[in-house]
Length: 181
Image (tube, rainbow, N blue to C red; front, side, top):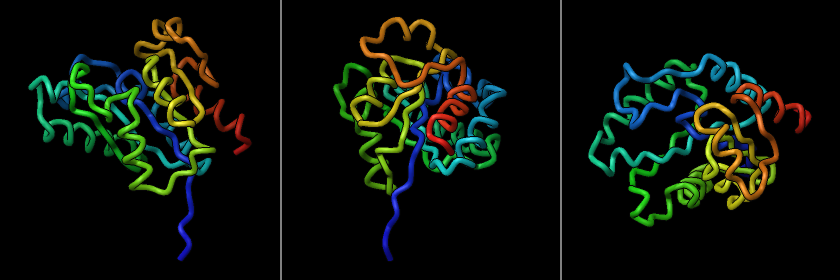
């Protein structure tokens, strides 16, 4: 059997798919943006695999544990009709110097080991400069959303992303238009 690579959308979580709540650890604090589900449906319909890559230093800080994070991701899957193919997270503190914390490529590299990914047709969508820097370093196209910290971080970029959008739905539409899907 010949394995086939698939184009993939790497998605930041907080500020991109859901409201950014400091150290989201409780299901009752999870507020998914109303435009997230239509965005994911559009991208999935265009043939993209959807992979969340998220820094979660709240684990390293002892604010919550892996079980709480897993519950939040399961609830996200429930509310988003199971459209997300995989979740990857970095539990480390920014000062730990780990390779998995964005803008490091550890989560992207793990996804590439786990999944057959066509990097040449893949994207990173996020609301922070480190999301865009991760996309640049991974060799994928990039889209910055202005939700979350996007407005502030857009001005901090040395290099502009391929797309700037108001939210993940607008980014999804621009990606699908741009790639002819």
